[in-house]
Length: 434
Image: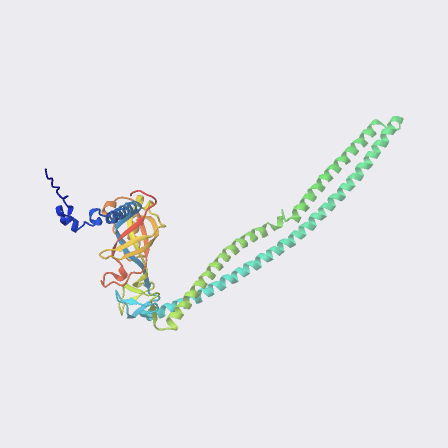
């Protein structure tokens, strides 16, 4: 008998006791996708932001243009001497801040100013006398003209009466001539009838016919006389053809021409007298009422430059000093005409002061074509920018950008920021490049 022995089955615990004792967690065998999604989303967001920044930068460069040659400048006001005299006190000094109404100088009128007052007074008196004489002569001429008008009217009345009488006389002559002609005609017609009866001769009839025709001619001549007399009467009534008034007409024309010239002289003297009286009143208020004239600052600002000193003689309107208005500043830049034509004046302008990170926002105040000579003549602003090398010989355009007041600078050469160079960025019309 064969004995079979069965081997017991191999236990898994015996083969891999470690695996059975320490099971592997499910999370370690299958990692989650969430960390990967979060990281990927972060990198994607960074990329989108970078693209957006780059795209915005490109669009900004296409719609804006930057110039490095801007110059801060401002409004200058030159204070002039209001009177002639000597500078008694002069308180102005370059770079000093002043307030509106602050006394900057005092001018004392001297002997010359008193002499000027006397001269003005003498001029007023002389012109007054000349005006009175001219007015008196004008009144005399007007009276003479009125007298001539009356004489002319009287002469016209007399001549009209004479012409009327002449018409009446001519009418009487014509009436007599008509009566004579009618009688001659009647005799002729009566003898014409008797001729047929053999009572009168043919010669008698012919003689009467001739007398009738002669009488009719006198009638025609009288009619012409009446027409001439009536024409003369009408002309006389209108003042035409006054033989005796020719001299009066010439006198009248001469007087009217003299009156016109005298009227113009009177008007000139009257205007001159008004001007002299105004100057005299001003001189009296300056030299008589006050011995010293004060010059005050019209607004708050900075003394930009001085032209006079204490003790100097000045004459109106000599410049005493130049005042800078720190509340009226702008940046000026010179560019080409082509560049200026593309600037959008409705968009704000960015202005960055050189050497700083400060950025101001301004607006386009002026765009105008300008020449090199125009820049030299401009005395209404503190400084003018230089012409860039690349624009030499090209048509230039001045662009002025109004900016708010700049904080007081520590550098003495930068009064209210005047003279600082700037970087100016303009908005453009649409897309494109200069």
